[in-house]
Image (cartoon, rainbow, N blue to C red; front, top):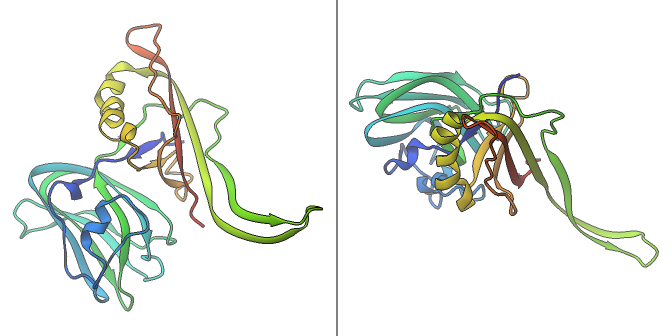
Amino acid sequence: MQTPIILYDNRLTDGTPAATDTAAGYDILNILDLRTYTQWKAASSGTKYITIDCGSAKSADCLAVIGHNLYTAGATVSVESSSDNVTWTQRLAGFTPTSDKAFMKLFVSASARYWRIKIITAAIAAQIAVALLGVKIQFEYPPETPYTPYAETAAADVERSKNGHILGVSTYNPVLNLQAQFGLVSRTWLDAYYIPFWQNHARLFKPFFFVWDLDTYSADVFFVSIGDDASLETPFSVLTYTDVLSLKMRGVREI
């Protein structure tokens, strides 16, 4: 079982991303607003690049995307980096997503000033709502068991007759609630990775990607924010370890 991963870091925010081309009304900056209902769309099919100049060498080892048509478009997606914006090195080998739902891909960490996502489609223009390309946070251990990967709550407006018969239903994407609890978390890992994530991103209710076992359940890629009642508590009995770390999350289930 692979340990859970959070991705909130994003090289694409280190500057202003540039796209090879863009359809009217689908600005490339839409991929940065962390909203799944605003999108970038290419002006045509073919080979497209989303490129960022970070200003200085920055690291990345993970790509996550949600709100896309890359499976439907038969797209081949890869990641490349460069020190001079001329010579490019492939970091993530080309692949085709297995659905139009969220996906996450890992690759060997590298550092470069320029990064780009390469997308090749044959007939359909690619579109993406949210893309994060950055350095992942990987937990030291799996969540404590028994672990429930997610709880799904149906969301609908239901009209019933007085005796209970359903007269009409308007359904929405189900609500996701996730909670992962970890025991004996090292203070070194907590201070280096989790606390900055909490202070600079999570507690501001900014969305992030969370996967609990990318190896075995690669389709369980969730785009979430912390729950409305989430808090940061780090009790400890031994100074080098936090006894319990709990992460409450909420999102929308893709259907």
